[in-house]
Image (cartoon, rainbow, N blue to C red; front, side):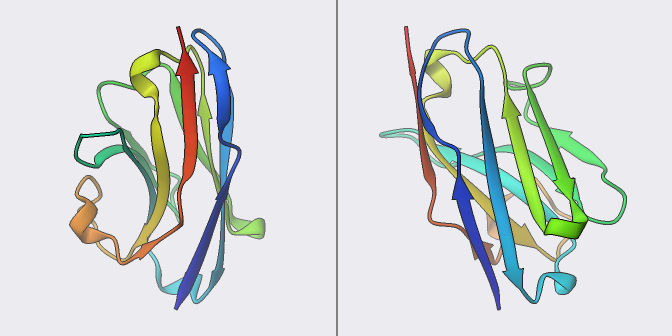
Length: 123
């Protein structure tokens, strides 16, 4: 089993920044990559970014490219999502997830999920 705990959400004005953290524990050595997803009210959950543990290879949704940066600290088993130039459209619950699949953009590939952290961007 893998346990994931997110932190760092909050309320920020448009144009501001937040950094989310996701601490992983348990059998993390079995996971290939970590991802961040988000779900806004009334919308489906969508892919935000992912990172491969071993190579630090990263992938981003077009909507966040150039504004968000995903990174990882292998020693701490922690993944981060630095979010800059936030927009009201970024308001959502953000979830981190772990996968042993190479299909990183689909939430169905992820078998472990955190509880989520709320990010609210005011205009």
